[in-house]
Length: 204
Image (cartoon, rainbow, N blue to C red; front, side):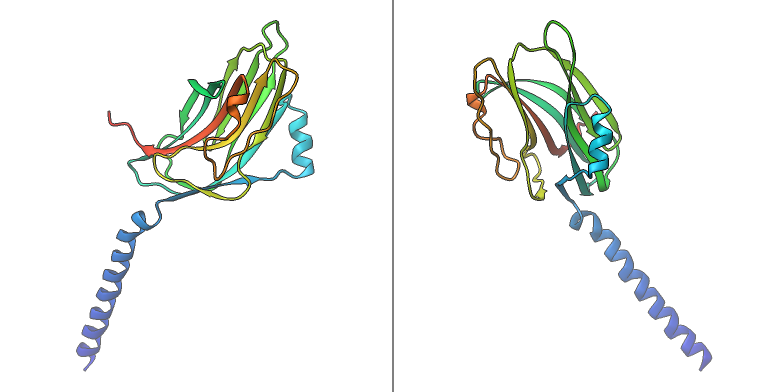
């Protein structure tokens, strides 16, 4: 009788293990989802940022899990009169695949020199990337493009922040729906857009 009970327990334990194994195998495909939402700074955080010399910056929270052969790219694109010109920054977050309230950001710091240069700051979960951007704009605006949570779609860019510049006397604001390419950038002489893209890893 004892042997029979032991055998039954062994069978139940084996079935439980098999069930758990099946669940683990299904996780990667069901959890392949990345979302981005705005992070609202507290008054104390805003005060601390104001002491760093960064003129304008927006933060976002990143959540989700990628497959091992997926990649997240963070970049800044330059547009002239609404037409894409070039990519100013492009970085990825390396081998990391899981994100839980991971912070990303895009900010601008002015540089006092003759060519009115800007220092572009791109924060990714693993660090910070910067580059210098020279321009002759006399008026500019800086705006966040998403208000609610956005779920990324593979190979579809999500635009999070826009910096616009002009040499004219007026500058209209731009709008975006769910992180799509914002409308109105064609009216700005220069537009810098902070973009996140979920894509495949480049094969070596």
